[in-house]
Image 1 (cartoon, chains in turn orange, brown):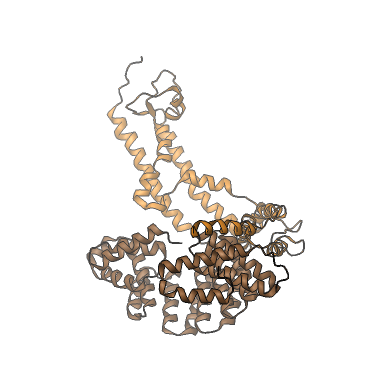
Image 2 (cartoon, chains in turn brown, red):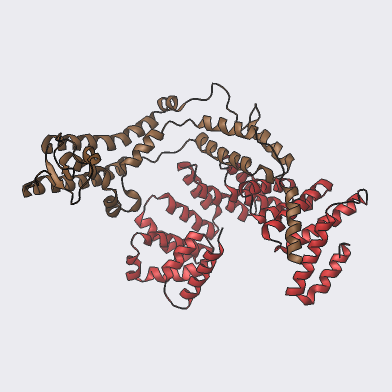
Length: 246
Length: 301
């Protein structure tokens, strides 16, 4: 068992606390900056309509058996005929999201703004932490942990003999970066918390091609076998009534 | 849809608030959440909350939500002065807000200055052409003025974009029924059944519309939908029971005994018995009327 490391109280006063305070302040600042830069974007008519078409077509597919066969066939034709069906996407017209982004400078601009408010402060603070606080053992967790946590808690210290419950300053930065969400939602209100992890998810989700989902919906609709459920209902109604009468 | 437990909670809170037991804010929140129409109560209790500065400041940012709610309730109750005050307070807090602009449009509407309201809504739509509420207000305005054809036109245009909005489909269906355009109404009800296949009310109204259109095929289909309504409601819906009886007799009249071995007579006699039993339990004095009515349909068992 290695001997206990004694952490200088000056480390607490000059590393641990300033780091946490700065992280909180930066989070709040970023919230206000992104609020300033946020522009209300007007969605494209086509995109809104496509979303609605997909919902309606999905309803049709799910509940096809509840309407008469004639009505179903009429609707299917309406959605997926090869001339002007709602779900039919002519070949070549399906522009992908990438191309759309280049053709619409507003979209690129928006992405830029989002990125700026996220990446610039992050790189700056990371550089700042690295420059001033690298190599400190900043805190100790009051319970022992397994070796697996070493990479999470002792980022920046390449010593395998240090007990895992010690936290390096850089790791403290990361813990703050991802762990302050609860505090932000307290300070800024429930929905306003800037959640980095969620935003990263959004970023990676960008670039879904809406025309692809239209095509998929059309294929799904084409193979639906219509089997009218209502005749069965008649028999079931009979049994329900029989129970009620007797 | 308001579930039974929610409804019970609402009425409990309502009586509690009415008898001065407090909990006005909870009641108002529930009304807002369930989107029920209790404008008189909302106006009364919301206004008393707003007039008490201490209670009002205790709400925090929800104060403005309350202002909006009370404003809409006041417009509904035609206390335009109250609505005006609320909207003014909101305007002071949120200048250039579209949501407040919507309220102003509604106030103009309530005053009956249609053209001004129209102008307000149009300018709102110019800023954001996807504001569904404003679209719906415009449609409602056309309907209120009696321009049913304009309302239909607007609704159709609205549904072209927002075609997954089943409330709009329902509105359109009801307008078509009121104009006796049953084929179009039937289409709308099919759309509603698609969006909520287990809602018996849509099955029932669809059956009504089909029965009204008439014709052998439609009557058969109507009967099936009445049957499905019976199944979905557990036989509790009297209208559906009557519907089955009416459909069967209409079908037998049309076919004039061409195919006697109709398989639906079983269902019909069962429906008739269920009706008789129900009347015996709930309204014994009207049983006479029922039996004579059923006899005239020649379905009495």
